[in-house]
Length: 258
Image (spheres, one colour):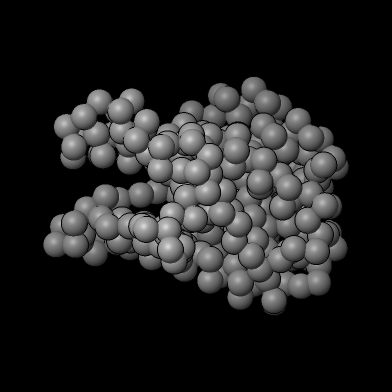
């Protein structure tokens, strides 16, 4: 359980960030969200949380927003990094602006959010950081070059900071497969449907059949894993990236035929 925790969640207005906020709030945590000014925060507000507006690509703004979240909650002992963007493009079509933008949100923004929150997390003496990574961090995916680089880098940051912030803060990651119930997941599904000229429901069915558990993941599946890593039950876990993928990683193991 996360009763009494004070959680800051980036990318909180939708998808995994929103579902995580809902889960943590239900379990007794106080939640403050951070998302872009253009994001619809009504669903987040409906769960009783406060949403702050800003852009984690701006490090000075990030620091101010983190401090404001700490003021609102009387401290921060939990940070969930769910903000992210994706770009699908062939190698020849990736330009420097797109590359830098993806890394600025997914990797650099996440790092400086942790840096800004670290004094609050250490002060709490029971800090938790959970980053939303991706299965592509371990396996890579064609046409997701910047996204793959950003998530592999994020896994590296998790490992390096876990050692530095111990013993008072644990730092972990959750690596979901593409989740159709999120904006990015829907984008990937639509791209696959367009590329194969097939209906989206057929694409989703075929994807589900490749997973040993026989279905695609949901934001709630991911939120459950995040909530565990935020809880006191995970106090002896740090520096790891947990696959939440319906067993998809099994298909890439030696002898799997993949």
